[in-house]
Length: 434
Length: 147
Image (cartoon, rainbow over all chains, first blue to last red; front, side, top):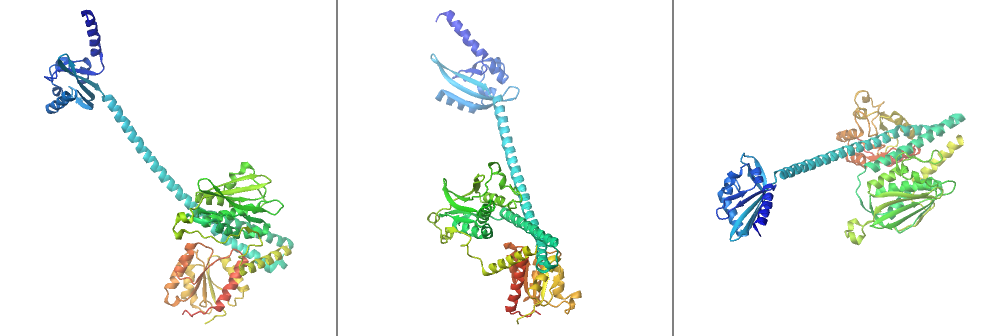
C-alpha cells in the first residue's frame, strides 16, 4: 500500500473512531494503561481525553478496584476476550451509568493491543426497568381486577341465592291462604250448593278454577326455586329408574290427555342428580302431552349415545310444534307461546333449563310447527361398573319395562285411588251443580 | 288408655286455616270442639294453664297438639322444644302440621321430639282424608296420660 492510500485509509478509520456512538478505548496489555480514547468515551464518563490517557481502568472507576481490574486482565489475556453485559459505572461527576463492556485482545504485528468497546445502555436499562415496572403494575392491576370480579361474583351469587330463597318463601307463604280459599270454596260447593243461585255457583266455580291455577303456579315456582337452590351432588344415575319415576310423576297428565308414551331402551347410566333429572323429565313429558291439538298425544322417550361420552335423551311428541324463533325464549321463566287454549304456567321449561344448567348438562330441541317437537337433554355417560370398580357406586337397575301406557301404570295406593274417586265425585257434584 | 273422644289443640296463627281444620275434623267425626292457640306463646300458656287457661272446663288439657311451625312470637320449633323440657309434658302427643315438606324441617322436628310430622294437604279432600285417618289412628293408639 503506498503512502497516499494508507493516509486515505487512516483518515477513513480515524473518522469512524471519532464519530462512533460507542466508547472505544485502546489499552496497552503490558502496562494496562489507556493509550487512546474516542470522543464518545469522553461523553460517557465525563473525563476528557487528556485525563483518560495514561490511566489504568480502575483509576476511572472501571472496574471498581485494582484487584478486580487485575483479575479481569488475567482473564482477558487468557481468553482473548472479556465481556460484561451490564456494568454499572460512575461518571466523573458521580452519575451512575450502565454500560455493556467488551474487551478484546488483538495482535498487532509482534505486539498486542486491547480494544474496549463501551456501549451506554443506561436508557435501554431505564426503559427495561420501566417496562418491568409497568408489567408488574399491570399484573397487580389484573390481580386486583380478578379479585374484584371474584368478590362481585360472590356477591351476585349471594344476592341470587337470597332472591331464590325469597321466591321460595313467597311461593310457600302464598299457598297457605290459598289453601284456605280453595278449601272454603269447596265447602261452599259441597255443603251449600243447593242454596246458591246459578250465578252464585258460577262464581264459586270460577274461584275454584282460579285458585287451582294459582296453586299450580306456586307449585311450579316452588319447584323452580328448589331446582335452583338445591345442593347438587352429581353421581351415577340409572336412567331407567329415573324415566320410570318421571312417568309416575306425570301420571295424572298422561291419563287425562290419554297420551301414549313409549319408552325405548337401552337406558344407560348417566352422571346427574337423580331428583333434579326426574324433575326435568317430568316437565319435558308434561310439556309433550300438554301441547297437542285434537288428537291423543304420542310421546317417544329414547336415549342416544353421542361422541365424547355424552348421552342424549330425547322426548319427542306429535304436538303443535314450536316455530324456530321461539326456541330460545321458551326456556325462560313465564315465557308462554299460547294463551288460554293450552294449560301451562310458563315455568316448566325454565325448570328444565335450570336443572340442566345446575347439572352442567345441555338442553335443546328440533321442532317443526304442526308436526311436533323433539326436545333433548344431554348428560355425561356414567362410567360402567367395571370402570368404577367400587360396589358402593353401583347403579340400581330395575327390570326394564319398555312400554308405558296409562293403563299399565300401577303404583297408586288404595288411599290414592279412594281419594281420586272422592275427588271426581266432588268434581261431578261441582259440574252438575253449576 | 284408648281415647275415643280426643281433645285437639290446634296451634296456628292463620285463623282461616284453623277454621278449616276445625270444620274438617268435625265432618270427620270429631266430637269435642277443637281448641285453638294462635301462636307459640298462647300454646305454651294454654298447656301450662296460666291466666284464663287455668279454667280447665273451658280450656281442657288436650289429648294431642296439632302444631304449625311458622308462627309469630314463638314458632313451632320453640314450642316443641319447650314441651319436651317440661317434665309433665314429655309424653304429650305433638303432631306437627306444616306446609313445609323440607327435609331439614322434618328432621329438626323429630329431633325435637315430635310424635309425627304431617304436611298440610293442598286441598279439602286431602285435609278431609288426613282428619279421618288421624282420628282413626287415635282410636287405635294407647295414650298414656301426661299429667
